[in-house]
Amino acid sequence: DGAHRLDYQRLIITGLQPGRRLPVRLLVNDRPQADARVTTLPAQLPTLADKPFTVLLSSCFCQREDAEGAVGRTYVQLPAAARPEVKILCGDQVYLDDPWQHYLWNTHDPSELEAEFFRNYRATWMQEPGFRQLLTDGANYFTADDHEYWNNAPNFATVIRDTWSRDGRQQWFATAGQFYQMFQTSASITTFAVGRLSFLIADTRSHRDSH
Image 1 (cartoon, helix red, strand yellow):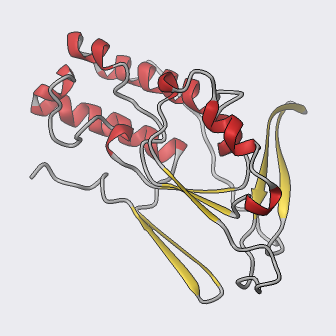
Image 2: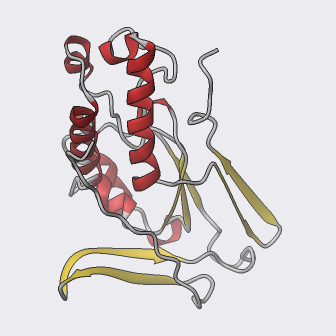
């Protein structure tokens, strides 16, 4: 409704060699704002003498339940031989309906939802030491589950007052879906392969009906 604006951009970097770890830095007016490390997929699966091709499967991170940053601290302590080449984050990378006590007693217009969802993503994904350390190291593939929207989405939730009406559910779902596409992925299905091993990551939440 014009109350808020969020600029974002996706970049495709070509010409990279397979099986490499590369540093990435975001500069604004030549000043560093953020750093990360990306990992390119290997061309083939390793032999028995090499480090295994390792995939980390993760879900359900609620920043308020991990105030000490245990997830990120644990991740950075992984030995080099156990570091994943790929992380598949399969849902609930943020809990937009947290804290539920707030959403039980209040309803929200679109502008309020936008502001609260942004604050939640920012607090969760910028947690350092913590979840930010996991996100900024290596390759991430995302898919959604219910808390990218709300508990039990797209059906109503007993403790989320906004979901008690059809219009409320539609507004929340549409607004949360925009954030999911901006922060995580706009792809419903993602595929990739390493040699003869192939992966298909499907979002089975975002287009689910209420039946």
